[in-house]
Image: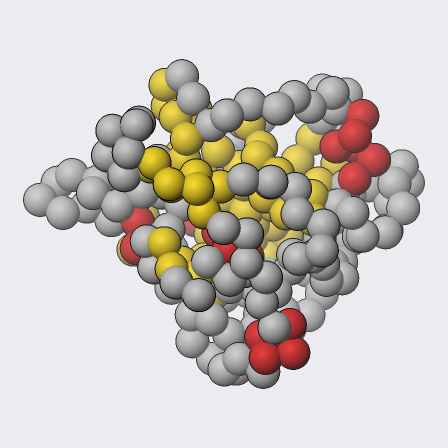
Length: 218
């Protein structure tokens, strides 16, 4: 089925939603960042891929791979995968299933510790309501001392259960149709870098007044 920058075309959305298992730092060669932020090779980190996307309800209708100049581009075909075989993947290693981390614990009402050096940080809307979460290394989560604003890109529709990820007093615990998102940082114009993986409650996402935009992940 092929691959792009080391990520399988089959289940491409899930391949983009890889999760770090510990400290995370951009990979540099001779002091320069030569790998894009959206692939695992772009980071010095242990990571894993979960089966979290519903292949029957894609949120991105077209992926375009750009090779160098903007005009050197190719459309990436949307290829599904055999879900049964995917569930039978190795139990350890970079493509393994996520271990059961047990119950999390609150930390300043903004962060859970999931073990393995991974933390879950709350996403708040403009009204300061808890509408979703992002996963990032504990070292980065601990460094957050003030609210920050970021863009979020919907990558796929949730295809597997997830624990409480939004304010249960405002939103149901229904995970179906919730968007899996990448938290990104806009570098310049349409160019964005990946920062973390998250999930947003579908009702909050629908109410946010989102807009479509062509972006280039770098």
